[in-house]
Length: 152
Image (cartoon, rainbow, N blue to C red; front, side):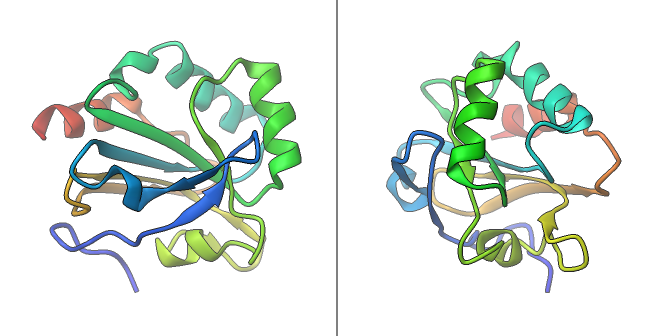
């Protein structure tokens, strides 16, 4: 099942790298949401993508937009990973039940036990406005979702 542009996005609640619960529903009416799934912490492509976002964070996290990055790693791995790289955005653990949120967004790779590179832009009312799903080894073009955010 794939998600459809213009339909409600799945709501989710996960623990961030500091053990604080993040709920997508808490942003309703307040902020747009960028949900960025990545396969594994500490890997080259994933680190490079998240560092590129870190270095241009105001485009993805500001008064109008909240960014969250999600992988199936544990919150303990997410904590070390985010601290080492200086990430100032929520890095969420979709660890248990393993990959449940990635499955809800249809980006869970059952064979590898991880999320593929899916990016979703959700508006303030919880409606999916843009999405792209790349293969595990295919890096994203962050300019694409900057354009999608500008369209909101």
